[in-house]
Structures are given as C-alpha cells and as structure tokens.
Length: 249
Image (spheres, rainbow, N blue to C red):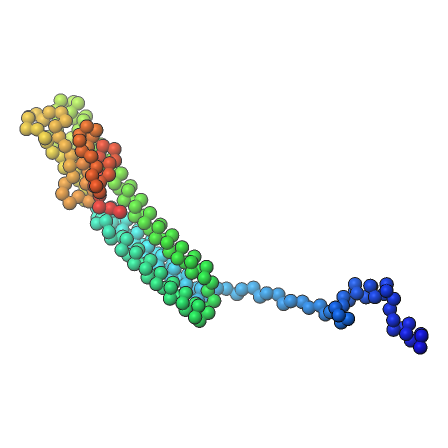
C-alpha cells in the first residue's frame, strides 16, 4: 500500500513544476481560451452612406454652386445684396431638419450611425456655407476695389488736364484719348461716374468740379478728398479718397 501511495503522491518540487506547466485554480486545470479576432469592418452602412450623400448635396447645391453663380453675376453689374444668402440659408435649414429626422430615426431604429457623424455633418455644411459666403464677399470686394482704382485714374487724368491747360475739362470726354484711353465715365458694368461742374465761370477754374454717383448705381462712388467735407455715412465706407456706397454683401 505504501508503494501505491508513493505512486500517486507528488513531491513539493513536482507540484511546483506542474503548476508552471498547467496552472490550476481551485484544484481544476484551467483551459486556455483564444478570443476570436474582431472582424474588420466591411464598409460604411447604408444609413451612413445616405447621411454623407445628403451632406454633399446640401453643401454643394445649397451653398457652393449658388455662391459661384451669384459671383458670376457681378461681371454684368448685377447685385441686389440679398440674393445669395436666401438659397444658402434655406439649404442650411433643410439639412438641419434632415439631420434631426435622421438622428431620431437612428435612435429609434438603430441604423448604426454614430452621433459624432451627425455633428460632423453639421460642421461640414457650415464649412460649405462659409466657403460660399467667402466666394461672394471676395469677388464683390475685388470688383469694388477695382472700380475705385479705375475711378482714381480718372481723377488723376483730370489733374493732368488741369496742369496742362490751367482749367478743368468741361466733360470727361475731353480726357480722351490724351489723358485717358477710353470712356472715363465707365467704371464697371452698372457703375458709371457722374462729372459735375460747380462753377459758372468759363473756362472752368481748376478744382471746380465734383464726381458723384449716378442714380441707381450698383456701386456708388463719390470723390471726397481731404478737406472736401464729405464723410462716409451709415451704409457707406471710405476707400482712399472715395466714399463707396454698395448694395453688396
């Protein structure tokens, strides 16, 4: 019996070795388990795809494209000052309403779209609207500054005429072609200069003239050099020696 007992019993060293090879817990041998590897995502869900398509459509059709179209109208002297923000504003409202409904559907039916994607979609739409507004503002600002620069060249031509003749020109056409190469009254499509004589003396004394915008101009330019007493009023801005009144953005 003693031999049988020795055959089934383990020494302390043997038990330590057995625990290293096959750890036990509560006297039972623990089985090693291998966790299944996570499956790689096969692609965005249909709900996510619909979400981003809506964002792109609302962003480009509602913000970028209207901005480009509106900016192109400036070349023809057209701008009423409130056309562009309307379609962009409506596109933003429509997209926001869509995202609210989409979020509710996502929560109720568990479409699998994460909430952060919805907020990212709103951010992208805001970025599109900002980019569209920048296109409109940048284009209009460039045209206004170009109009002021051309108008200033007309004034410089008048000063050259006065220096040579000792009097002011009776009309702006007197500047062509010696002092100005083309019609000086034309500044931009829909924008012209009005030249007015302020003295009844003939020949017209030097400096006895003024430049005011013609009625219903898209860009109203008034020549207001230092000392003229003319200042920019509400809705106007001063660029160089010019008071600019625009109905642009």
